[in-house]
Length: 331
Length: 235
Image 1 (cartoon, rainbow over the protein chains, first blue to last red):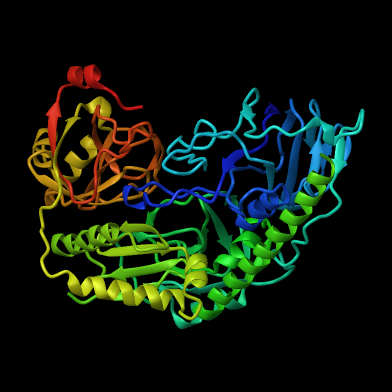
Image 2: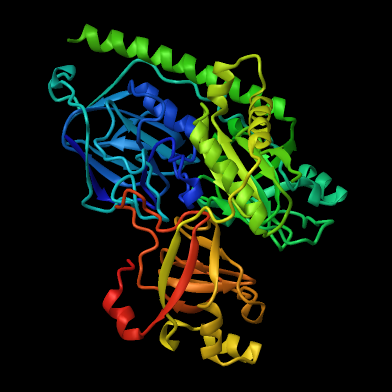
């Protein structure tokens, strides 16, 4: 009743909503980069939003299942194939024991989430199943997955769901996620505590420029490339707290957006804070891609978050009803 | 003491008592942190104290649901301001006293010679100055369990390396400006390394994984290389 890693991907880690309440000890949050992607994958298989999932980058791993499982992929499209059959994105599928999953090509997005019905059987560390790579703890042995790793499922599903010889059964619905990843939209931010340290010209060019994500970008942060920004205040900042979405100004005049594996504190001016509702979209952008930044009032950030939560709640209810109908009908 | 509260976007708020490294200010930061930890306000995800600031991360989703007619930041700002008013007395030495053995042997102290040259002091004098003070743990950050301590004697204060080392071994004791710290894990870092402790500063398998807490009072005790090797428990 497990998932076997035959060949590891670039960075495959177990993540959930993250580990909170230990920031005063320097223990950083970790967690899924794209929280909406994680929630969608989970809802499709009947899990709560924050059940631990497998977060994958491209190249993605090669996986074998040794038991039948209800599974869903969400977020990036890495063209999944189950024994050669195309596995649709944002759609629940029943997969038969013995099936191998391969990912052929990165078509869109940067991080793909894999959820299984009932979740993975994992121990929590400090209240979370997220992998903390800095501490080497949590998730699966505190590290990225390697060949030979075997992650057990918590729940057994009935083989009676399948026809004889059937490898994959696609359930007849999928989630529409376009609202979570609007195309060509600016990433919105609220001014950070040190926004006022930027000179007026730099405040303007922060919003009027295209910012390119450089190759030095990962789960800890995205280093951006654009016009040089200038401070009107040369003072040193004593370290203070940062979080996912904090935009810091580096000494070279370029911004960095901290992501979910960032440290808990930092000493660079916090010029902005990306609104939470735009973090899923940002998490699916990758090196080389460019975007604009747009300053919005705090009220807009909360309204966007509330709207996103409502969409997720509707999706959760819809998935639960459909899943219940299918599973009871076939028993 | 005057303070200022600002939003950290829709994720939290940051209370700042200025941009300073000061025992009294930090004691106030830690007193408020303790108070808020004790209160266990609903929807508070994390409280992150630093030198002269405290950030609260809150679950805005939950606040929007539970208090639909209040803007989450305004709600929390008022709540926090109320608690700040209630703090009238602050105890400066609230932390535990912790002794940390450090081996200052050249083989574990790649920057000791250079600091000696720059400060025109004997390496032995630098070791004596570093180990004869009690340091306050102002905050933890950068890495799980990394203590920012201060302040060192002005004669041994040294700016960070121009370019950080790709790998600093766990247990390394360093100086950055007037701060001193200990690397809990192998990590890249730019502090000047003057010794190493055999103690493990961070152990995820322990119920309390970090050896030190904000507010602790730390003293370094010089040990020999033989003692270091005998007691080494760092990962």
